[in-house]
Image (cartoon, rainbow, N blue to C red):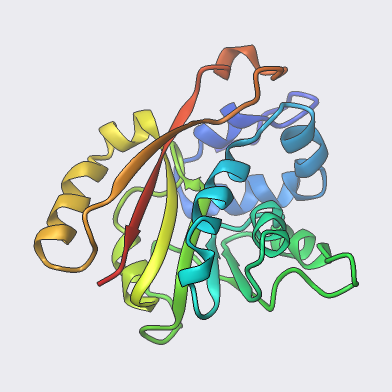
Length: 223
């Protein structure tokens, strides 16, 4: 896969990814401009809604939260500002993690307690029952992750962990997330999820081609 030769990388480049190696290349190039060229200028807002939905459960979360596919750390900032005390981040791209490491609270404290470089399509070098919450805004989408990594996420989540996991609506259907979640419910791994629909971009987006793009935010608990 060749990274686009356009002056700016965009969501179409991300949707065109095929392999973890493609992700490493793309996000390595995009890392230092992602917040300005994408989050700010294009009006990417779904991460705020995903964080908000997890924060609705913050009084029930007694332990660290894992930001899955944390990228440059915009979700982590929202969680910490909303009252989550301990957030770790995991991402395949080391350059994106370097950007996340720069994110600070107003008192100068790092947003993230720990940042982990890992391929989410593989077994994670993390113990069982570690996290009291899971959050993910932009990782389960076209060109990125299907439902298969959910097994590892459920494993590293503690019983009762609250989850808010965004999945692009069209990807949810194509990759059959519904069947995977139904199977996990039947096995007693998670509670029956609530699907909350959210827009990826603000009404003022400069990305008209994707102005109507949406995600399902999967709200559930690990059993």
